[in-house]
Length: 227
Image 1 (cartoon, rainbow, N blue to C red):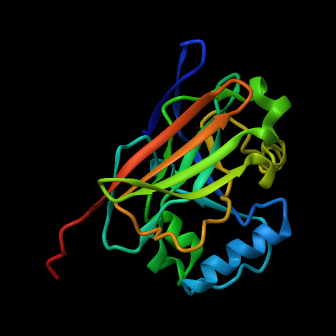
Image 2: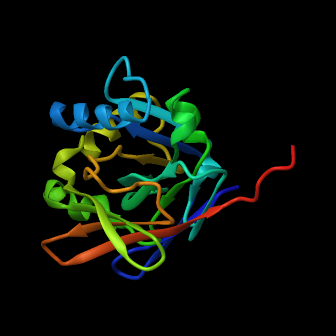
């Protein structure tokens, strides 16, 4: 059983047992942004998808609030995203970082999503509380080397398909039920920044209130296998 606990703005804590987890992909509203992300991945050897947007189901236990992500090699990296969390009587919005095995990704995006966790924040907003300004919410990501942070992504939720779009998709698939977590897909990375970093930090911000939700984790290298 994979349980996550979120703290809301009013101090209430909500615990959710994750039953279904899904990762959106190639989910920019702008086809230019989608093409840019396809190009980013193509540079790493990832074949272009046959259709966009994409939706990848992953194992529910991969959704995590961990502060450390173990990696088997040095070619894994995150992606700044937002996440929907369906509870018993509400839908929450939080920050997320979709950590991905880039070596495995060249053989299959769905496989790569299964090889690393989806890290989500420990705080969340009720989607209904921010729905009227959803496009103005900001997503920013930094990579760290243990001594400093470098910005690698910056944008707004207006660049991505809306939560309402994905709620309709979940409804059509009978997945708009308590325990479903859906990640949004990501925005383009800045050119020239090394994504294969020792740490990732992602913030979801609300400029109208100054509120920020953050997730942050270190990437820890596993010992070499004996084989």
